[in-house]
Image (tube, rainbow, N blue to C red; front, side):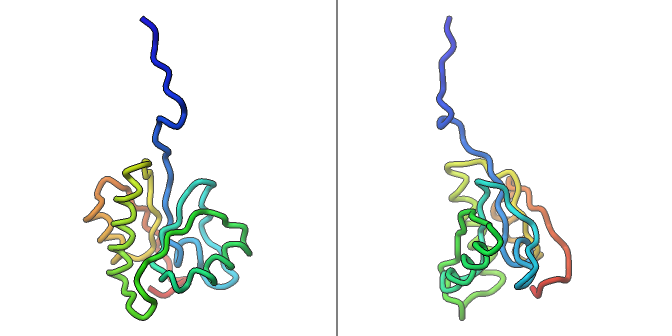
Amino acid sequence: MSQMYLPPWAFPTTVNTFDFDGVIYFGNENPGVRPASGDIIITGRSFEEREKTEAWCRKYEISNRIIFSKVPFDLKTREISGYHKALTLRELQKTMIIALHFEDDPVQKAIIEAMVPEVKVVHLVHELTEK
């Protein structure tokens, strides 16, 4: 009996996901954790903040895919950002394996863990950025 060949694209990709503020971004001149090639940034930043966020990433040679919140800047809250990240993780899980999500905000961490318990959340604890 011969074994069946499966092409590489038949296997799901495994990635890590990263919050932006407080994980990758610690202030204007303070890059933090750097995602690997292929990893994904899921930020609570509004789509209205796309240009300045992408400019900062280019400056520090971070070229990962960034998924922004669809909520206008003036309506963002920590809770809304947590729901955005959890729903995005659920959507990504349809086509890939999420190994770890890196998060610094305890409010958002709790929402993600409640809504997507199979994703392990790495909690970065520091006082370098405002929550």
